[in-house]
Image 1 (spheres, helix red, strand yellow):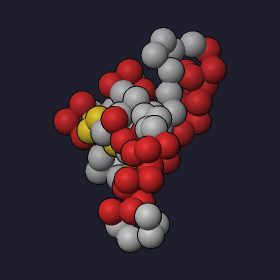
Image 2: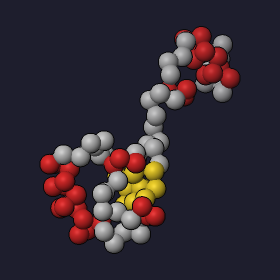
Image 3: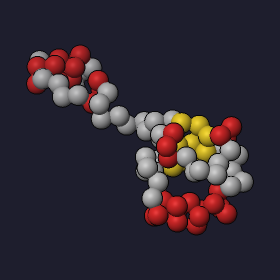
Image 4: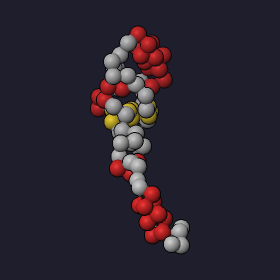
Length: 83
């Protein structure tokens, strides 16, 4: 299995050259795990491509800023603050 987090939405000379270099090492992989469909190698068997977004999503609710009040409440709730 090969996992790649990087790619380009629109191929160019450099992505073509990169895939040409990597292909001998990757073409026999059982699966390709990529972050976006456009990041897949153009020669890869689509049946072996799996799209899994990165685990860290800066736009998810858990990564949004929270108020100082809510920080204090959360830390108090788990026992890290006395007050």
